[in-house]
Length: 136
View (cartoon, rainbow, N blue to C red):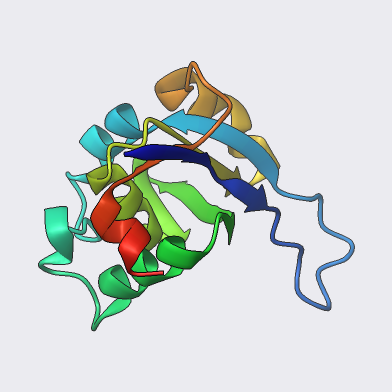
């Protein structure tokens, strides 16, 4: 088994949003975030059992050949965590044992995310099995 650090790419605003404050980047502890997320209707079960179409499987295929990825977007809705984009990426990485990931959040939510989910590490380390490596 080998280890790879994922290089995360900040997702810029779409055209027309230039006057808004840029998203904050927060590093979250995957286990802590997952405990809160599993209480929501958006939750993707281990293995992607209830995921949308084949997105979970495609995440695995992506990481079989790539070590970079766009950041996921999340928010809080009445105190509950909610993905804007990236729930299948998060669930696949969670299932691989990743301990920390960065999320893009609205600037006013930075402190709330850090208070609840702040990671000890500022790196996403993906431990790659021989099976995943052979798929490349």
